[in-house]
Image (tube, rainbow, N blue to C red):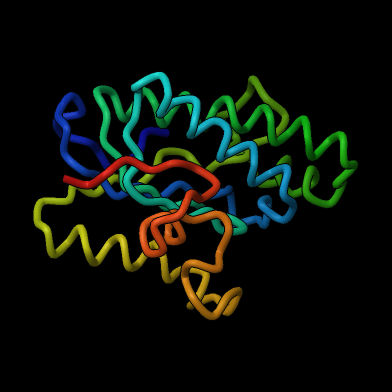
Length: 179
């Protein structure tokens, strides 16, 4: 199934706010190894100049990014495909049977080539067209763990760009400057 959300000019350098969700909002990011899979892969795509990352947060069942890149649809599709394989390997290795059962149960019926589905199909890109919207989206991203009650302050969430942006220190994943 194709996403109804589209990036209208994926070759431009516009900021996009992107949300990618685990199928049925299942809690996949519950151990450091799973967070690290996303961090490593985002860092790889950033290093290869396929994506610029301006802000991010990884929660237990979804991630938010503010990004730009020459082929965002292709990069996000590749990121999700590759991380799904790595996450499944880890989940199987950890013998998280309950989670495997759920990933199999909720797999879209038309996906015949795999036994499991990790990510919901598509993603929700929103082009950011103003400085005010950019600020609002960065704040939304950084306060996500605070709203969930995981931390008191955004910079305390390890898997977010809040520490780097707010405290001017290195976080788990280096982000690009917004200019």
